[in-house]
Image: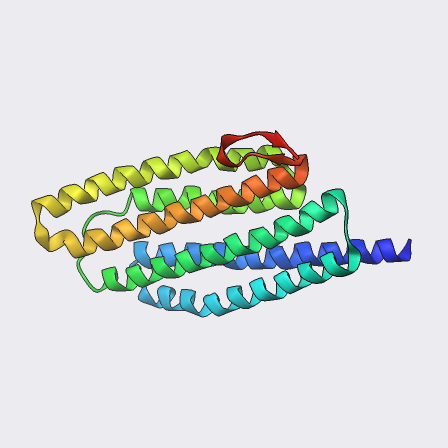
Length: 223
């Protein structure tokens, strides 16, 4: 009984560490977008400082998962929890990379006159950030219904991305001087789209963890 209790404590520690990493990533994404919207390059610089923390946390959590798998040989939902955690931290680390990419573009854009009012990009960011927050809540609470709602929001982000790209192409065709700024903004949108994709990956992992159901590639397959 004592061994089992200790194992549950280790699982709880794993969950808390993963949540700390997720919170750091959430903040990094928000900070990167705000550095663009507020034209605040210092915020962008702060984003770069968080990148190493995120990378270090990924390594530490991964090592913890491997030890639990090797020493505890977990079964059923505990096994799915640990293997899902290993995949989730990879997606979180990549979200952090995308946030850094946004911050880099913000620094470049902040040195030039603003090309257009930022309306759709903050909306994209708002949806994307809500996906990241909710998917981690779904993971912690083992809520596959909430995870599915995250998957559904991915289409909203894709639609906004297409809309912004079409608008930016119009700017580029009408005035070649806007091309550099428009390309930077397209990359920002692409980064937000990729973050939403990673949130969707995590949502799929949560559904697998809770329901033992694989929904990747739109297939509902019971394991």
